Length: 212
Image (cartoon, rainbow, N blue to C red; front, side, top):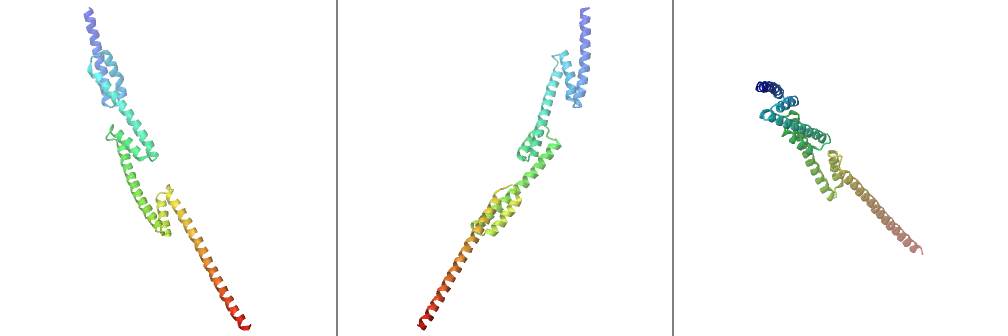
């Protein structure tokens, strides 16, 4: 009787085990991993030596952890993208891509960042070329030409402080040149006036000597 009872219990456990495994496998195949986890755990509790439920539980935990990491990485990447930290954002998206290599959202974001970085690189190149030209013209004292190019560079990168600083410097230099030129002109006028006054005085003296 004890043997029959044990056999019946074994049969009941096997029937329940098979039912649980079937239920778990169906959920797993539909990629409903958290739904599959509980019946696998129950099945493993019935027959702890069975390898299949233990393997599936390990697989599900790995998938859930990977999914959690994927969501965390894409979340951090999205924040970096919004803050315009594009290299950081790209690195995080690429790490997420190592988990889901065919994710369309992540692939699209990386393509978008590559486009942005390409435009930034081109803008940086244009800006540096303009600054180089403007600095050279400034050194050659071609202030008007230099000023115009600094204005152009400032329009390309309004956040940069160097172009407006150089424009102010050029304006100061030009103002100083204007002041010095005005002083020189005034000095020349004063010299001319003094010379004319001396000439007239000499003529007057000559006239006076003729009458005396």
